[in-house]
Length: 152
Image (cartoon, rainbow, N blue to C red; front, side, top):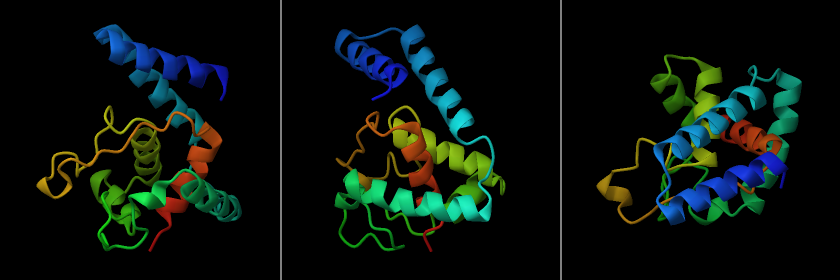
């Protein structure tokens, strides 16, 4: 784990345990937003995207994402929402801005409670929650986002 990410993780855990302050929360939000902007400075070119997708597939499997999420458009009895076609939903949400859609996915995966998804308060997902993913390195998260972006 990289030192800044370790610091963020510790700050978030401390803030959660101690009640935290609004300043702590704002600092964590800014850190995650900056990480998304830095890691996703531009939409990857086709060759880079292909390489990222392969790495992202391994991150998806190795991080336990498939325990709760289907990579198809059907939920298939999983606890979390299906991820197939997520790029279409993000393009609709972000006015066809593929970069902003990818950045939102990065932020949401990093800290799903701070950057809530459209299913956060859905009765279909009552009791299900996605844990923060501070253990995934920014470059791995970038690859995971690219993998998810290209799911049919």
